[in-house]
Image 1 (tube, one colour):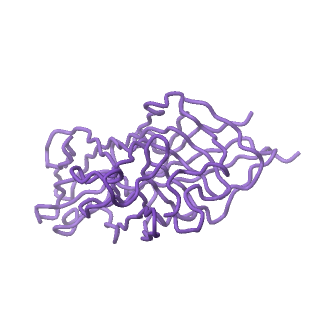
Image 2 (tube, rainbow, N blue to C red; image 1 turned 90 degrees about the vertical axis):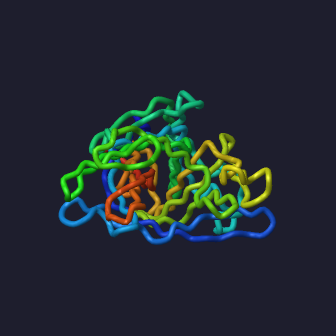
Image 3 (spheres, one colour; image 1 turned 120 degrees about the vertical axis):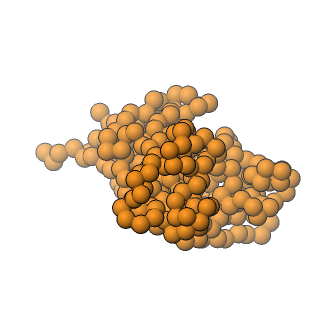
Length: 296
């Protein structure tokens, strides 16, 4: 029996490199993150350089999975720029998982399952035999995160529901809604592309439930009052595999390894003392693992 919907979870360091590109006519802009923050320091010295950021593993990282699949070509590009298509093109894709609840998705807390696995609630489907270079996952744009970390000074720093961090503060979850990849620039940046991971690169796109991106500017695409893209509700993650994998008649299982790395939480020092004052969700990654039938 072919099994598709098992997830496993790891803590892995991933470094992200971002590209910017746009095209004429309908413009879909991709964000640039800049330099990565270092890992938070918990032994000796302050947790981070004063007035800077650091990254750490979350104590909660809850996401909602709507769909997973595999594609033979990138579903958001015709010309390689990842800026020329407004709607996800799944004509080269096979859906391998669809959540039973298409309103809320299949909800999982990755931080509580690191090192283990979980079965998603929904329908799995075997893709046709073939070679696939572009696995994808469709998530809700909301990430519910939490953090508690002990510094080298012995103090416990807890995250609160308003995205602040305090020593000895009450621990509460924070709902981080991703609705624009780079805020404060008076435009929508609905793509985040070219992030380097061990197996290739990963791209992410903000869309509505119909998988349509917003253009960079215009009243119907950008909400100036909230500094958000108009089309939100879904986050589509696409892995560009360096080495595509092949589904054959001998393939028994395909497992998605959802990697929440030390980038799962980003913490910021706004008080210039080397300890965190604010936090939020940070990028994830993932890989596919295939299990083949033993040779006869």
